[in-house]
Image 1: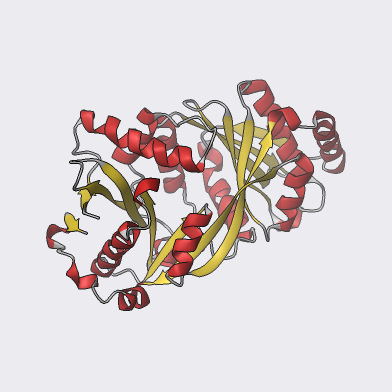
Image 2: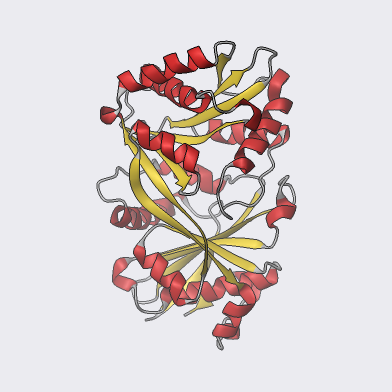
Length: 361
């Protein structure tokens, strides 16, 4: 199979290029997400052209040499940079993803892309490659190269038509009864007067949740939060948070969602958590139920709510199952030693890495 692997710079390609790129990308998406509507091309392009400033992202296209400029695959790697507040916790890790069109698989193309990543990892002094995979084909690929499974979780969905609103109202009433001295507050951007306390709460709650080794120890600072808010807002994502306050004003818990204005049928449920001293009063259930009623009132086009959960996070999994969430996809996290992978490929130095721009397979 004759193909080339070329560095892809989203800010340097012509507008005409994007149609061919998304035609390819939607074939990949459609294969593994049957029946799902495609995401907004404009939104996806904007994210690629203006990535988060705390991440360095490097992209490649895999092109057929037989059909000129035909995209048959792609790959990208990314890592946190020194601007990220938690950089020191995962600075040795480099994350990667590879896609190849169905008709071009089993020809060593994905392996060729992996070799490129090994080269790049050495050049930027990363010692661990990590992949998050969501289909059996990718699991087989990672297993073939002796990847170590470091974590498992699932993407779970709750379809709006299946919500038991009587049960959710019961959770609200029980929460108000057990935690009668608590007040709840919604916001989109964190108010300035609570941002320091909120970021400390978020950091504690996030790292408290059982997650195996999915993200390392995460640190959220006010500066990072403001960067995130600006980036998501620019890309038409509404970030809604609900917090609980104790009688003395202490923030004790939170739940948050994303609503995509370009993809109005889905709500992405993100972190839910309660600080240790304030647990045992049904506060987590109350927050989750209250957020469902908010979604019902404010986002009537919602078809389903999606969330990612580590199976070892028993408290949240229990709440979600009672709410009606069901497994949509399995996710497996693999890690590879860059040194060991390089040793597996005797021909790794075959590639011409001048300017890190083009590799021939």
